[in-house]
Image (cartoon, helix red, strand yellow):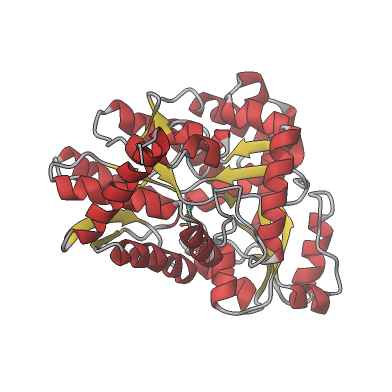
Length: 414
Ligand code: BGC
């Protein structure tokens, strides 16, 4: 049979994978921050698929929700000329690393497997530097979720608040019934996560995009942004005094254990609920029905000197997008598959809603990148803006009018 382009292409990948599978005991070091119960279960799926291809998973886990600690450690390793094979890096940071000239191309696999047609464009664009794939996406997390313990609401005799106008009344009743209204961990990225959902709820997707993605100075200094800070300030009364420094999964545990009623957190929190086999309900964060803040986890590959490691990177990239892996990983992680051609039958109602809302929000222009999870603006800018939000939240006397000015100034940091 005369080889066609298609058979030749299949052979390129087939031979590649076969070669990878035969490699003996090549270490593939993977940096990540997936250390909570649900996250670790998901990471173990990644390890399993890599080992099933004949490689050795070298775990480089750096604890710390949101990944700030992991990014600090990563910089040290790259600067010292010893980068891991793969690292969990997201959003515009992929471009920043690409510009350093240290990333490996995944185009060999991406072209054969037709990633361009397999992935949503909004995701594919983020994975490329200078037109080449340098990262493989793992999942899509939705950040604008509110996690609810239904039995706490029942005991408090109150409905789940769906708007910020309804929130204070509901919180009051929950407090009166002896529960903490809002489970929260006092770490800057958690404050910023809550804040971005408030901005989306108060101003809608267009305002969110203008202010937190395009960094428009007028939008940042607007009355709408002031209102978002007012709401953030009002939440100080709804959290417990032990929130400072609490990890996000400990806050989720408060909802699981029936100590708290709600948590505003991305759907990695669902990994904790399912791991604990506890009851939960999910609602879009108040006022954000129909809008979707996306957060795509991705593995970036660093150039390596050893050919077998380079081969292993391609094998890992291919495996990550395989239907089987997409299912088991995302069931554990709480996210949805990044491939839009997979059936969602085995996923829970929250994931099914997330998948439907992702498509609908994209069509309606209400799909926006999460700023708190490094999808929207350069890391230095997001960091400066996060500092403003967290300082405001932790200073009971701070004024919203001052905060918007400081936020607008921080948005100029590069
Ligand atoms: C990551 C998630 C992770 C969460 C908490 C987010 O930025 O995208 O994968 O579970 O942080 O650590």
